[in-house]
View (cartoon, rainbow, N blue to C red):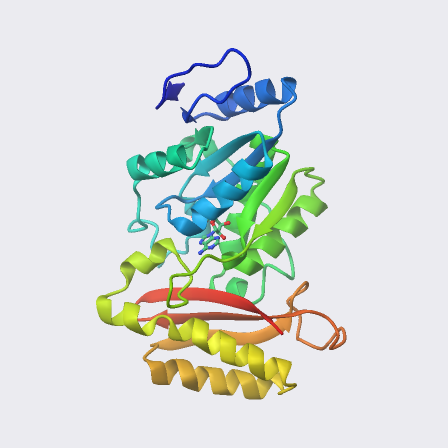
Length: 297
Ligand code: AMP
């Protein structure tokens, strides 16, 4: 095991950021904390950390005695034509940010540690995992569900934190934890945005200056769509308006911008209009695909 700060603990006080790379070491540290009666929070990430990730860390650090972050760019959730090879990676920078934010343990496994040779078991969340992102990124949620189920089982944390930035992913994870009887509580954390409304994302690093100027139109269009939904406009009309808005603003293409039931992501209204709704979008700006979502009033 490695540590980036001196270990001063023999009375249960915090020791600084420790780094482990094996499931066995992760389990050993977490079970020693649990033996000491300490609560443990888990924050899974793919790294290239920004203030959105750090909001999850902050929530865990505030609520739990110990916080574990994970750093793993999960090959199983990238399609053949997606950005696995170019996905931003900065483990040294991530370690510094996690340390400053009060994280206790970083689990940064290799792909071989996560996926033993011959592995053939996957987690698939039918229905919820097949629509919206699942439709445009086939296999994506199978990869996410498999790695998150593994991380939840490996860490055995009391609570795990996930961002509402990936709203459908949060619902998929809640579903799989319930269905697989994983006892970790799943907490959603509000989206952190830049001052101009753009949701922070590791992939924003791909945007050119011109694209970065256009990008906040996604959030603005979500706001407009939410207002229209609140005023009772029909979803097909809102979708058509939003597509035009985004293309006029300079987006290259729109995968979807739609209003759905906030809990099931089924068509809004199918279960009654008194239920909460969510506006969700995915659109391409050049070759960068951005996603975002907000509650509908
Ligand atoms: P990623 O590294 O992109 O897999 O994200 C790791 C976690 O951070 C996921 O639970 C994301 O939903 C969350 N996250 C990413 N960006 C944001 C953001 N802007 N605000 C809140 N949470 C975020």
